Image 1 (cartoon, one colour):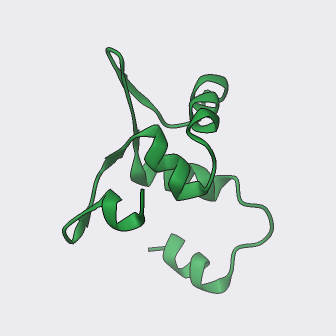
Image 2: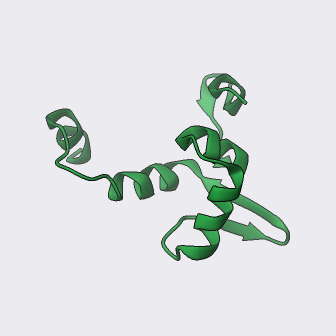
Length: 80
């Protein structure tokens, strides 16, 4: 699934499937489910048998795990 398929018109979907998260970070769907099961900090929403991932919370979770110093432009964005 391409990025265009994940977007709806001009706005992105707020909640993603494991497959969409996997495409976003270039890992398998199985890896996404493993992260959701093994890491209590991984942002996941479970309703009945449905599992979804909030796009912005996933992005924040990834940023929190980046290694090294942030670039100047990223520091400016984080301060807003």
